[in-house]
Image 1 (spheres, rainbow, N blue to C red):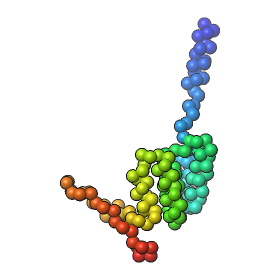
Image 2: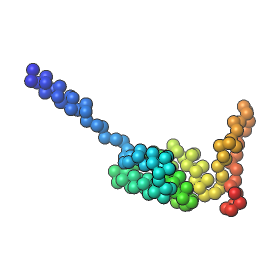
Image 3: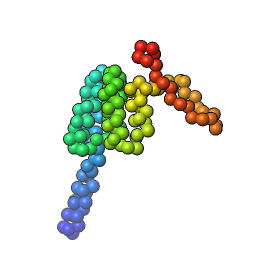
Image 4: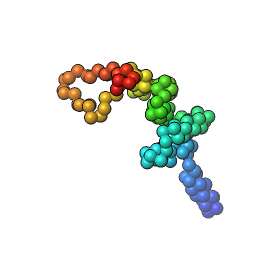
Length: 141
């Protein structure tokens, strides 16, 4: 009887233990919520993301997409070259993102401009894929 109770307590304690996360997210949920509500400036958001990245790198548990999100934050601050570097870092860490990251690097470097959502039209069946539009020189947009 005592063994059964001890076994039950041990199993119960094991069931309550939280498994270790595969990635380190830090306070990302709170930061993302504050950013979505407009409670953080672009600079504050970028600094918060960099702090999360630094902690995640220290544990070798950087989540997918975090480097790219920091790249977007840098792009919002007008730091195109650094944004492209962070998109490249995302591509290196997560090779399955290469096509998307290559496109973002090209956008960050001004090689192509993203089409506004309102300008995107679904292609007609059998139509050839649309090519990227070259970006206008700075000051001509």
